[in-house]
Image (tube, rainbow over all chains, first blue to last red; front, side, top):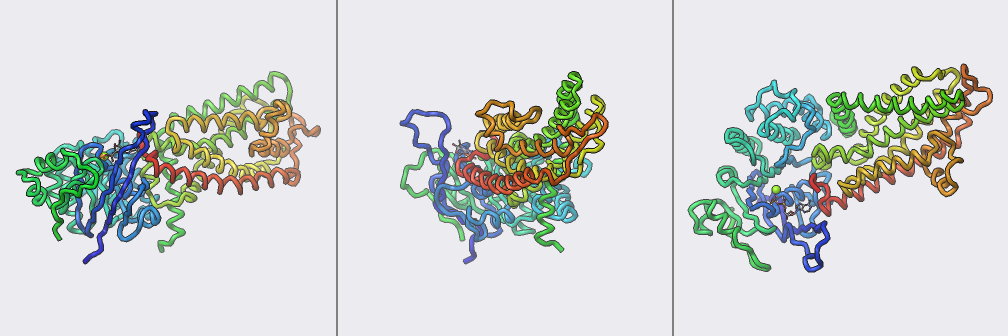
Length: 270
Length: 278
Ligand SMILES: Nc1ncnc2c1ncn2[C@@H]1O[C@H](COP(=O)(O)OP(=O)(O)O)[C@@H](O)[C@H]1O
Ligand SMILES: [Mg+2]
């Protein structure tokens, strides 16, 4: 059996509420209440879940930006948080908010990241330009301050930034949320292409069922910090006796799982 | 060759590159800040001119120049986290494979360049408003003292930079309170002896106290041989005690600052405070 590229075991995370609450409600809810899954090398794994279900928290733990309260995480065999320095060289991340220096141009933002990762600009820049070209962006926009760009363009630059370091693992937190249909299609085509050409392992969170069906070999439904179902979209639909993935999602995440209950999981295809 | 040293140098350079381009894009604000630093310093120096007191003028000019240098250095580093939180780039900088020490070195190099530019522009401005001369001052010695002070101020800056990680709302305010306290206790515009007795021990803890005392001597403030036309700057050997104190403070404060920052960063990753909102 091939070693998984990403291994998550019984992952737990909770945040203490900052406002002074009555003592009765002091027991904070788990943002992640014992999540386990594997992502095979070269696979695209989709995480779907309602707002607040813990998707971003999971991505942040994988990105070394949060430390879990319990459980185990390995990225390409490296444990987090102990080997975070190793892991940081292996991951690229795209978040839902395009986080850039808004007054700097795309080119300046990208060169800064290249230097930050210790890359030669002469190596990194063509790589970023190549990504942007394939995402359908025109070269003349690269010197415009980012704040003057549309959200779709910013998101494409965010993807170029993540790919500039040539990461074997890509963590995408709602990369297509808020994009127009054309940009969304550009990004999806690019990701399919990337997996085929480079064999990049991808974890993708999304609210777009069609996107998940198109891109993800395996999909996990997250609700209230728990993985309530996992499998191919076909298996999920069958398990929920639903016609569409949409229906399956509502059926499987709408009801709360109680403690100790095993996820209504469809077996993962091997 | 693409060795570890090249990589570290590029990572250090990243922060200078970023700082340079941000300065370029925010140039009107940079000019405003420089202008403000200049007018503030000139207003203080003119108190000495109005009193027809050359020694007072010189004390104030040296104080204004050094304070501009040190506070710019401190501020640039102390506010770096707050700026990134504001821009929303903090998570991306923190997840890059940059050792905090390299991160700090990069910030410091840029902060030092910034301090030199501001201090020079203030000096040129002050020469317009007052008739001070630099002739006879031990400028080489002043530069040595400033470089020695840089380490201690970088250490203080890093510790202060951790505050906005702890509390996004209160942290940036606290770094300014701390800066204000340094201004008060370090004898920037007056001898520390005029401070209330209970504050004086605190002034001994501020590295700026030693920077100012040493530089005043190197410029010749208070030396009876100093005239309005020629300063009687002391040789570097006379400020060795201050230099030693500054270097010891730097050697303690830089590692301490990195340690504090590392602890705070880890705590932030446990509690979720790195996130932009809240
Ligand atoms: N940095 C944080 N501080 C406090 N609470 C947080 C933080 N990040 C997430 N949470 C909480 O954890 C839960 C999961 O949030 P999140 O992972 O952002 O969900 P999703 O990305 O699925 O919408 C929510 O209840 C949210 O309020
Ligand atoms: Mg989210």
